[in-house]
Length: 141
Ligand SMILES: [Zn+2]
Image (cartoon, rainbow, N blue to C red; front, side, top):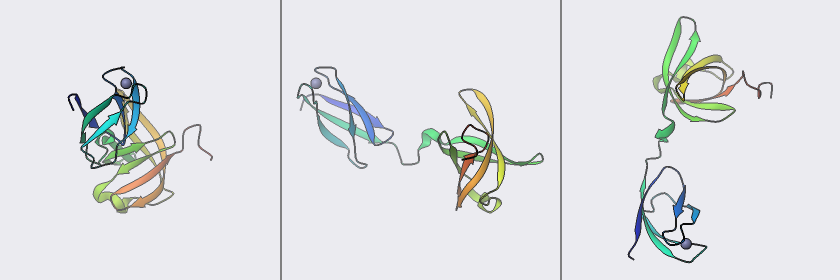
């Protein structure tokens, strides 16, 4: 197999470009697969691709943030995932400071801008909490 591509995976799905017809196509790559022959659906060309899997920590979203309990008390945390409705927050040793239903503020940087949002704690598990935004268009749902 002459041509091979080296691809760093950040998720399960990856866009692979065919070296012959230049067509793009998404492929699902199972974790642990280090190389695979990928066949172009358009022209039939087979390419040997090598994959480097980024660890499952979703480091792309491990963003520093600050949870604000009160005007005098806040804590440094990390955001581990983000959706239009809420956040997953890594809270390390602070798990006991949180309980479902708790109303807080979270402050983080997004695209260079400081963002402060109102949140409500939805679930608490060791080292991690899930929160919902309460200040958005989705509030009240
Ligand atoms: Zn092709």
